[in-house]
Amino acid sequence: HDFAITGGANPKTIILDLPMVFNAPFDVDGQWAERNVLNGAPAFSFRSDLSSRIGVMPRMGTDDDIRWFPIEPCFVFHTVNAWSVLDSVVKVLVVKCEYGDTEVDPVRDLDSNPGRLVQWTLDLESGECTETAYHTAG
Image: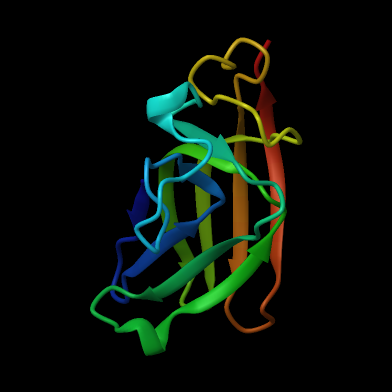
């Protein structure tokens, strides 16, 4: 539900594709979903069986311009900041939560997993993504 935009001469849009899903009453085929928000399931569920990735594209780019970086499955409450160090290196600062349980309710379970401040460094030349943790709450 969040994204970031860098500044500078060649601004980039940062897209977070993460496995937090809405437990809608109906599935993609329009059929009643067995577990959904109307029959007691949490509004959102973390799906650790799905992948996570970060996309970087030029600010005025198209979907053909997105460069994807795979990351470990996680949920990001919000981006804090994003900036370009060079044209080829982008840094993204986020509040990240890691869940192993697919039955987690991210709103109710904040006390047990309050998140941590993390910086991802995305190297557009090498395709590498590195993670640096700055703080673990609690």
